[in-house]
Each structure stands twice: as structure tokens, then as C-alpha cells.
Image 1: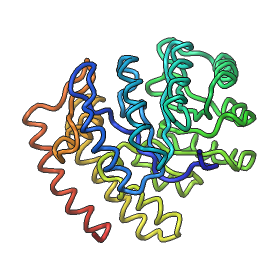
Image 2: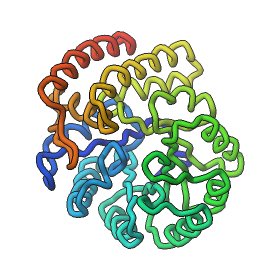
Image 3: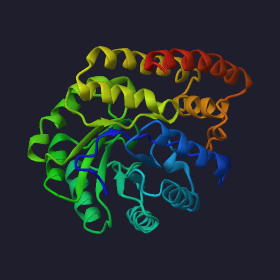
Length: 309
């Protein structure tokens, strides 16, 4: 069951792997318990941080099945069904529903970007065949097309569409979507970039789908809870630590894969799971890993102090 609206921190879970088509099953189990222990409000699998589009369909299904089995209804499980093939999105959606997932998440089909009229028609065709509620995933940097405001307004007219995760980083867009929430009080508006977490909450957002919550879930939950309680001094202190995570771990590599590499490497350093990457990417080499270890130790101490633990 999905709260209406869904609020809080919903980590976009990384996919622990040991090989090209092999899950790190013990690592997956440890990771799920690690983030749940941090007080998160849900889990999102097969998103960008989870390398969803880079995984084979067999592996995607195994990940969904094992995650739902391990979570056992303790929090909602959201499953990414983004694909260039309409029938594959439907097939995974039906599998996820049978496995016990609670909701689905879809970005616009990528590679050949559609116009907004085509995107609205795509949503109309998709939701009438989905077995679960759908969250829109606005990720224009990768999908090459955005859910523009008029398309979001159109989506809000369909009760089967439950909300939007915005990873554009465009706060003007985010505020424009927030202004539409009066017409759908049950709609959930979530922010992707953790650097914008507190700003998004202050703008009317309901929570965050933040990659760093794989590592330090209690920190991100702390930002959300402090903001909700009106303790803005604490919220700002904790948001400063969120920025430290970003600055320390996400800029070690030279390419756009550096964020996922940094999160996976840090989790491996913590002994939680393997840091194998889906091809064409590879895990950090020894020099970068040593830098992650050094910075991670400092972060753990700083975050513990900020949280008062």
C-alpha cells in the first residue's frame, strides 16, 4: 500500500553485482537491511543509481523478486520500468506486481525522444494496462525529454498516476510542479538530486529519492524529519553534511558514472556489498578506492557528530 502522498526518503537502491549477469545476493540482503535501519520510507529499484537500463531482463527480475521477498512489506517497493520497448515495460510491471511490489516508476522512453503530445499518448496507453500505480520520473539529462508542465497537469487528471520524481535539478520547474499540487493533494512530489533536498522540501516537495541514502540513510531521513518538524537550524546542519557526501565521493572520477562508482565503492569499503559495475563501466581502481576509503572515514565521523550519535 502506497501512502497518499508518499513522503520521506526513498533511496534509489544500487544494484549489488558480482559479475555481468550475477547479483551479489548476500550484499543485496545486507544493503536492504542497512537502508531500512536508517528509517527510510520506501525503496526504489532499477532507477539510474541502480543502473536499471544497463541490466539484462533476467537480472532485473531477480533483483525485483529478491528485494520484495526481503522487504516483506515493511516499506513500499517501487520498481523502475523505463524502457525503449513498450511491451518490455509492461512485462516488467506485471512481474513486479506478482512479486509484491507496490508501485512503478517510468521515465520517458529514451534513445528516440518523443514530443509532448506523443508522451501524453504514451502515458495514456501505459497506465491503462499497468497493474500498479505509476510515478513519473523526470530525467531530461538522460531521457533527452522532460515531462513538461502541461504534461504533468495532464497526468494529474489520471488517478492511476501517483506522483513525480524530479531529477532535472531545475528548481523553477520543481516549484511549478509544486504549484499544481492543490489539484491533487494525494500526489507525491519527490526530488532526485540530494544537493537540492532541503530546498525542495521548503518548496513544497514531499521527500527525496537520493543516492547518498544508500550509504547514510539516517542523514537524509534526518534532513526530512527536521524540516517537517520546523527545526530549520538542524535541517540546514544536516543538509551541509549531505553536501559533504556529494563533494567528497561523487567527484573522484572524471565521467558521469563517478556518482554511482563513488556510492558503490563506499558501500564496498563499508563491507556491505560488492562494487562491480554494469558494463561499459568498471569499479574504481586502487588509487580511487584508497581516496574513497580516506574520505569515507572522515565523513562517518562528521555525520555521526551531526546526528548526535
